[in-house]
Structures are given as C-alpha cells and as structure tokens.
Length: 125
Image (cartoon, rainbow, N blue to C red; front, side, top):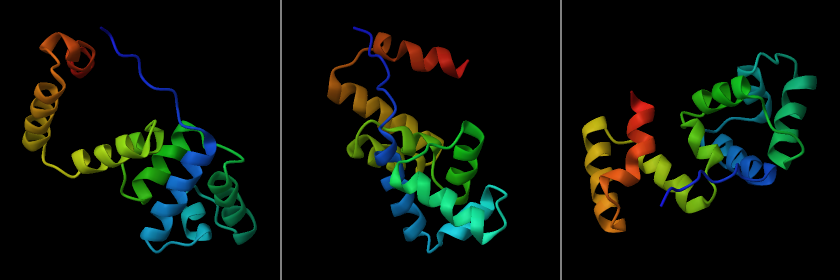
C-alpha cells in the first residue's frame, strides 16, 4: 500500500503553530516580521498577525525564513496533525544516526516493510 502525503493543514493550524513557536522564542510579531525583511512596525507586525490568524499563508521562501528564525523544521508547520508535528520536532532534534535508528523502530512498530519506505529512500538519492 502506498501512503499519499497528507494535505497541508488549514491556515489556522499553521497560524496557531506559528504563534506558539514565536511566543516560545520570546519574539514579538514585529521582530519575526523583520526576519522577512519587513523593517517597519507598520508592515511587520500586521503581516505576522495575518499569518497567525490564518488569514494568509506565507510563500515558500517566507516559510523557510520563519522556520529558520524559530529554529524549527518547515515540515513542522505542514504536519497534518499535532501528533505528527510533535514527532517531526522530536526527530529533528536527534543526530542523523539516531534519526535512522528511530525510523527503523517506527517501521518495525508499524509492521512496515522496506518497500513501504521506497518513496523516502528514492527521494534521498
């Protein structure tokens, strides 16, 4: 069986995760907006506010900048559920060897064969 990637979360889910991450880092909206090159208070804070309310989604380049500033993987914001988002965070904090070890355990736990991970291994090459 081939698993299709989950659709992107609704904008409000992205916004909630962005807000929680920003607050956890002790940043205000203007400071996070400055990461996008929005230096003026009049444009920086409102832009981030629109993202956090779910009114707008950032483009890919802005998403990457936000994730880098918040020290989070971009995939965290795209996860289909909060459990998947947390799993992404945990996995991203491990060194590569531990990531591979955990992935093997997850496959075993799920009863997945090596064929089930075909798409992932092909993407690495």
